[in-house]
Amino acid sequence: MISQSPLIPGLLLLSRAPESQVTTADRALSTMEIPVFTLDAFTNLPFKGNPAAICPLMHELSDDLYQKIAVEMNLSETAFITRINPSDDFTTGSRFRLRWFTPTTEVNLCGHATLASAAVLFQHKKNVNPVLVFETKSGDLAVTKQGDGYIMDFPLNPPTQKDPNEFRDIIKAAVGNHPVQDVHLSSNTKKLMVRLADSCDRSVLTSLKVDPVALQSSERSGRVKGLILTMKGSPDCQPGYDFYSRYFAPWNGIPEDPVTGSAHTVLGSYWSKKLGKKKMLAYQCSSRGGELELEVKDDGRINITGQTVTVLQGTITL
Image 1 (cartoon, rainbow, N blue to C red):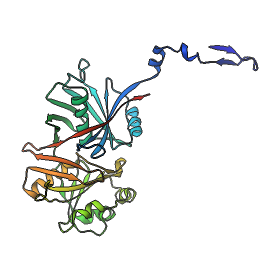
Image 2 (tube, one colour; image 1 turned 120 degrees about the horizontal axis):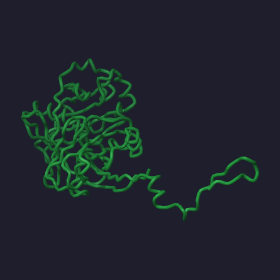
Image 3 (cartoon, helix red, strand yellow; image 1 turned 90 degrees about the horizontal axis):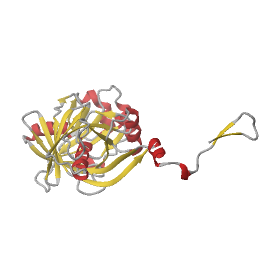
Image 4 (spheres, rainbow, N blue to C red; image 1 turned 135 degrees about the vertical axis):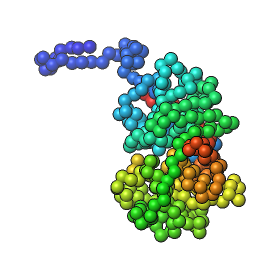
């Protein structure tokens, strides 16, 4: 409603209609509702594993809005699932587009949010297909439901051995004076893998206090966007982990990632050769912790299997 100001001639006043006069259609025009699920991935227990926010969308949004939602969710990754074929829905479709955003940037590959995305479609959208394929920046990623878990078909990213002196500063910032046995770099993923000496106990890895600011400032060449710390496991002790790891990516806004599928595309390749095994059980020993089953395949890819738990369902209202 527009009226003349009684105090200042010529000034027009705009007043809101009473709430009772605002129609449902008016609200629909001014708000957008986006479904969101938070799942803990690579675990069967709530508050363990790696939490991811998943948004199944009927239509693409702008990159700016994707990033703002990821900032709001403030998890390692927020994933957005969109339909490729407009005639598909989340129950009957078998191929979808998938993108992942950290609180600071879009990433090319994310394991735990892919696992969680598949779980949302299979569990909450009751998808009828045995296999779902996600079109991503890392190519097609297929996910198959198996029992209580999901098998993800991911690219394998074999790392190359490097001279530790090349990365002296970042290694010092991460592990201090603890002995290092091997240093490898995956140029494709920009992940640096540092293996602690076999003489180190698992407690050395779990007790490391890694300063993300010091880590980021120790490596500014752009060659490294993530640091994997790893050590040989105890396959003879139950549950028989072949290797342990932790992962840090302050360069992408993630001080420490609780459980990282993409890091295991590097770790799986490395440890498969070192241990002479195709099938391995891995544990990422962050404070939350998570378990991954790995199978390195002859086609140059890796199967990563894990479970999920849904801890939140809601609506983002914009």
